[in-house]
Image 1 (tube, rainbow, N blue to C red):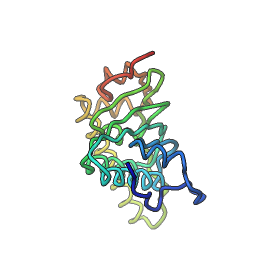
Image 2: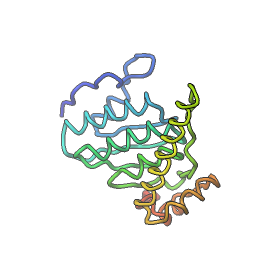
Image 3: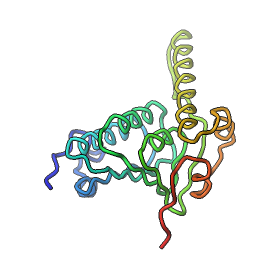
Image 4: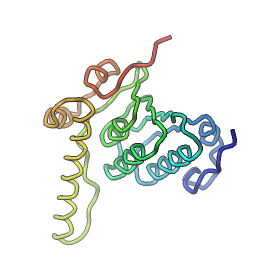
Length: 191
């Protein structure tokens, strides 16, 4: 199968080609690692849209994002929801904070046996400006945080306030605990 070339954003930040990412893309696999910021979310969204245009087979998203920006996480989660092909997430390593929104958007959610989920309160980004600008930014952040907890509540069947309390305690969940909590469907089979 010949894959369409990656749109801008399908390369390393230095502008170099990403042969491993391109090879994974041929197999409908996306590897998302590190802090999920606007640049990484844009790259992830571009790859998802590219694979969606290339066929209806599931996309496998391997996720290892210990933290991220709330706006970036929602952009990626909304893209996962918008593509027509199913997206299946495999948590490798640690996923925590805002990137949990990306996890909850997937049709199928799995974890490796030694992976960890971290429920953590999304932090506000550095804001600059006058008092009115800061107040508006704070209100927008509160709205996004509430939407984040509602998304997790819809996925898990738990109350948003319970999830918020767990996040304020920076609760870590093993793979088995994440299944019991309702954030993932299963732990991948042990060899």
